[in-house]
Amino acid sequence: MDILVAEYAVGAGEGGTLLLEGRAMLDVLVRSFMAVGHNVVYPTSGPVLPAGTAVKTKDFERSVEELSAQCDAALVVAPDELLGDLTEIVEENTVNLGCPSGSVRLCADKLECTRILESKGIKVPTTTVSGEPNVFSLGDRVVLKPRWGCASEDTTLTRYSCATLIPEGFVATRYIEGEHLSASLVVGNDTLSRSQSQSQSPLTLPPPTLPLTVNRQNISIGSEIQYNGGTVGVDTGRNQELFRVAQRSAEALGCRGYVGVDIVLADKPWVIDVNPRPTTSIIGISKIMEEELGELILKAHSGDLPFSVNITNEYNFTKADLTQ
Image (cartoon, rainbow, N blue to C red; front, top):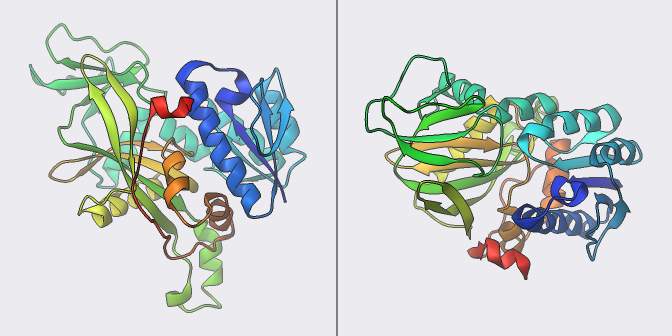
């Protein structure tokens, strides 16, 4: 099978940490799909990986359109605010191995995402935007972050006061004190699974969602909030609880394929963000999981996920490690 893996930072010519993270994730995905016998192409503005076939480009979106039409399947990794349109291009041309474009757009809108999860009974921080009635009390710790965006860029922490203004294009959420974690999942195609149920015992059906790892996030919190890496494959003692809420969140938003759910663990798990795409955690997952991530992503599309994966250890990494 010919597979397109299109990573935005590498393909669009981003620099700095975005490029380092993007290149590392791209390398994991390309190697993993190739390890199970597939040909992989990827667009690049310059960087070339040891594996896969690089296609030089000056227009990332056009490359996604042209290459996806030539491949049997495609997976796009891009900032959430761009990923919906890029995914729709893939859906028009070939098999999309990532989340559906509609699901991506729901996850990208931090206000809409939060309210959908809340309507399903999932604990989320109180969230509002400019022009809505005030929901905070004086002195509350409040996080300001872009309504459409990813990672921790432009995310700040402040104390709410009468002078606090929510900028246009931003949301304000109540800060939750607790342990900063994420849950990595692969969500299967439940439509295919249901169609198989006519010929298989329920006990032999593939699960709709496959938990991979719980990951501890290294977050520095000052006036700005920054992600600096983390530890993949941790045992919090409450992993099953975390996986359950992550699965409910992903299913509520219609996610498929690899999904990362950011959670603050306090009295209960609080869902902070749902990332409808491969996240930086796959760099560590590839080091400690015996199964190939690429194969699991393909099995998710076919509705044939295994019941579990084999995690051998923990793996710690920092952003500085990505330069090595």
